[in-house]
Image (cartoon, rainbow, N blue to C red; front, side, top):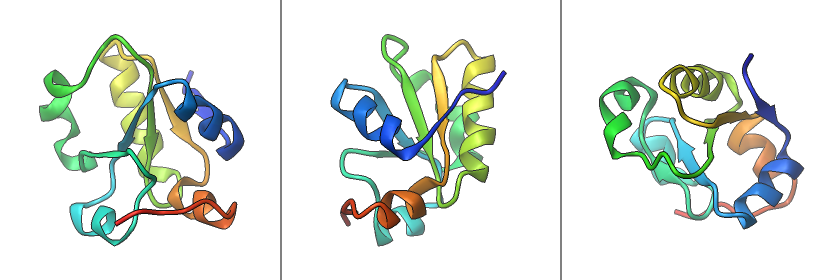
Amino acid sequence: MLKEVDIEAFAAAREGGVLVLDVRETFEFAMGHVPGARSLPLGMLSGGLAELPRDRAVMVICASGNRSQVGAELLARAGFDAASVRGGTAAWSRSGRELTT
């Protein structure tokens, strides 16, 4: 079953050292992303699995939560401890938290 976290749980998990993986396209990431997030577009995720650490949880984020669900499912099937961030970067921004460029 797909793990999904809300923005508050995501914010708390970020403090705990999870990997924040942004699966939006590179141009979207450049326009503004969660501080500390790593960019790996969804279309490149399968080929980039070897680059990801397996020793910590991965929180997958996109614009609204759709692509992150697909990404988190792919990661979970590959053996990662992965969760999708419900509402994505839009919810992060709406919650009053900053985006970085």
